[in-house]
Amino acid sequence: MRKVLSIVLAAIMALAILTGCGNTAGSSSASVSGISSSGSSKSTGGSGKLVVYSALNDDDMVTLSQQFKKDTGIDIEYITLSGGDATARVQAEKDNPQADVVVGGSVDLYGSLKDAGALAAYDSPNNDDLDAMFSDTDHCWQGWYMGVQCIILNTDRFDKELAPKGLERPKTWDDLLDSRYKDVLVWANPSTAGGAYIFTACQIFRLGEDKAWEYLKALDANVHHYYEAAGGVISPVATGEFITSIAWAHDSFKIKQQGYPMEIIIPTDTAFEIGGAAVIAGAKNEENAQKFIDWLLTPEIQKLNTSISYRYSVRDDVASPEGLPKLSELSLVDYDRQKAADMKKDVQTKFESEIISKRAN
Image (cartoon, rainbow, N blue to C red):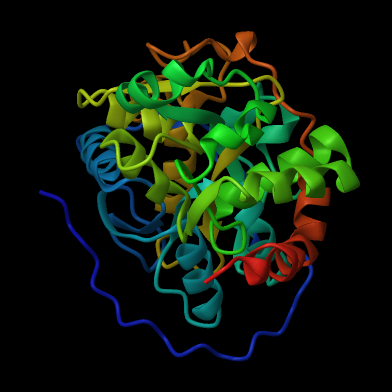
């Protein structure tokens, strides 16, 4: 049975901004696949448990928790949060950490935690054969899955309302600028939704800054309204409240599997995320946290995660999610993660002042 951690949110304390990770831990000597499932692993002063702040879907976390217990004997206690809320909570509790691991959400969110010294360095031996982009240079976070962005379309409404007007189904990001999408398109606000910010940065990298802002303002002319969270757009399209939006392919495909009339279109130069996990500095169950990072990177768990979440694996020897294109078949935008982090505040401020504030109430 899932154990949900009940923790009273600590009062936000003044944070001394530090450089690098909070502490440095050595690599473990063997992968987690060698751990016997018959006993718990205990860290010094800790216990046979692991406390996790999770930005994953709750049903995914249930499956992963049960499998981790089966494989290692270690109980997971977790609370599910949005990616932004999870990172904010880790930062607020920096001087008295209440969790051992933060998992899920784009690694773009983890940079501020690293800068604040809220993450512990850990270089898993299971990332040795992975592309360098999947691991922080100081080993403060570990990438363990990938997600790509897509156009989602309610096929019933499109075929009834837009196809008779001569509109073909969209193939590119630019196709969404067609005026016939006005008020049947919804999107999330880049100032509040990490996925929407990644899409905004994608346009800057795809088009250059000036043309990107022209694109975003033209897209806004078709947007009926903005949702606070990136995942909030999927259900209204699936149920036919709106016809189209921009979303993560894995989350959309999971909803589509429930029988909704929804098509997933992955354009050229699509944005992508690297999903992260990290050991929290000062974790009470640090060894268990390290074993969890090792475990996430094993072929068995990469295959499990792909099968339940439809996210792409960071391992070359794990197949792409069944029903979605192979990662090798996709055209990903040249996404500069450091630049995206550096410009984020300015881009969000500009989006609010030049787009959101000018919308008619």
